[in-house]
Length: 495
Image (cartoon, one colour):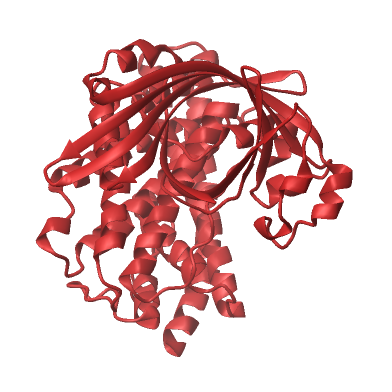
């Protein structure tokens, strides 16, 4: 078996010229370019995809190569997985070459023999450079691959435009150096979606959404590192889903994952670490600026949801927060070079932290992480729901504490008690209602601005409707808070 360690990066379709002119390619000792055609196989019930296994036949000139890939591990764009290849005589599978031990236990080889069929195709141009990279005492041989083409399934297509950096030999740290150097002039974004997953989401749209694995319960720094990596994976999955379907509801997932990632990084930075592993201040600053930009987009989305409740929404109000507005703000932000650089730097810091720090209990300067129970109690105590439900600003301030509490419940309690299960349910319900309140508040500001401009259809009646809806929402939040506060007090007494 060959075990791959690679970094997958998305690149805009129009950025190929900038890549080919990049000085990193001056490190190349070889180059080749070829057109690749691939047929991916699965059963009608997609058993391979469900087990995160890919089986394909690739045609390269007159040669046919059968490839089996298993899931291995993936963390924030860095992939490590099993891969086996065999030469075959044509575009038909030869399952006699595959040992049953190579497959996950859930897959039966004899069943596959009877039910495997072509699912989709990928056709793309592959440019490949072999780089000899060195930095200080580190050396590595890295393959840089640029693929451009498309996936075809069910008469639909999805574009392919990506870079893969694969470590052939040497130090994996240099994968990040090459990625960071490229991202200075080439817009890059970490990607977790494979060509196979692109095909399956065309072939079976119900599998379009990627999801990060659950974070197992933890009480040491490596568990918190894994939680941070999984939040980064959630972010990447949401971003890929927006790119594929323009499902703007994923903006809230994108934003909450970034907020929780920053929370994990904050507490990791408070641990006793070697000086070489301190979280750079500039990285904290860039993450904060990124969070502010996403917050603005989420507010636009929430405002759009708010005006959708109206039977007749004035054009001026609709145009202030529609899909066009979202797209015009979202695309420049996500294609900015500094965004790609920031996420690559986060991924690298987490990789180094996981590799170089010893497994040991938390030594947190702020005493947040003493043990699981103490952390739960601390997070529970940080939620301060308004005593007076009409305090709208204070409701908005509870979004972050409620997010951190609900994520912690998801992290630590795989088999929660009834009280913990209900607390998670109430926390998520409060977050949804606060998001709705945020949209109504943003709509109110827009209404006042449009009324000053004397925009058509904007009158005092519409402003009054908004204020009444806000009042009803804070009352609903107040009722929800009674249930949450009761659970909070009971669990505080038990802890």
